[in-house]
Length: 314
Figure 1 (cartoon, rainbow, N blue to C red):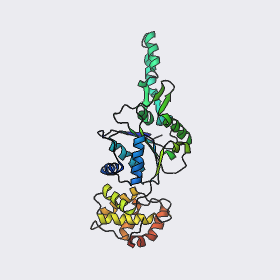
Figure 2: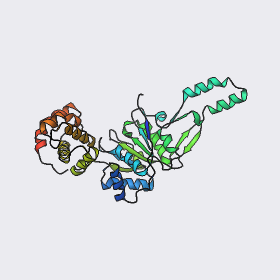
Figure 3: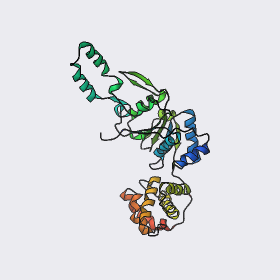
Figure 4: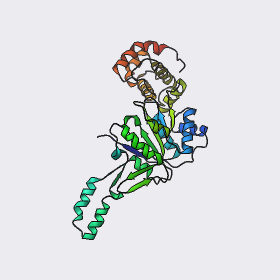
């Protein structure tokens, strides 16, 4: 289908689990992920009781980055399953390597009867199994259990959601030819969604739930400074303040934190003194934050007032 179902990252060195919410906030911050106390609390609880964590929120608020940061804090391997319409068992869990099996069948005729019988039995052995993210996460031998990121579950079909529910219920996957594979050390599961459709209650019941909202002004400025250290403090605050105001408008798609960082970088490249941007420069780089023509028209009409207005409470 031309899409990547999963990505696995090599783990950093294993580290001791965080002992407190404050320590978790500090260690997440050291990875470049700045979160509030509520999110840090639910992450720590998920780590302690080994329960899947369901993170919902608008696009660009840091749901995927939370899982990446969690893996870095734990020194765990990150296994990512990117969901999309049509995601199925073959892309998410496993499939057989038919090309290798066909080649193996061709070689069956070259041996004696006993070797052919053994070769036929081997056709559906683990040697010919292509492990996808779910199977890789459940059947792991890692020193630290991996973090399994199931990204944008709301983009998948309800049929796949039902299969996922079964797999996460007891961390098993049934392969008819091999039997049931059960996790010896279950992964830490992070499920994310943008609420493009409602996820079934049965899946949410098996997870700890947290809604990630847009950050307040001070946190957004801090995020810009961490993600784009080349942007001066004043410029980061100016861009973040305008984005905070844009989120009060009736836009088709509100800009996320990722767009704030991109816009600040774009403005910093063009700002003459690197510390201040006027309405003209903000207008010229607006495409870094606003992605729809109708929204661009609304924002451009309001931009002069927004750029000159003092920051408002978030």
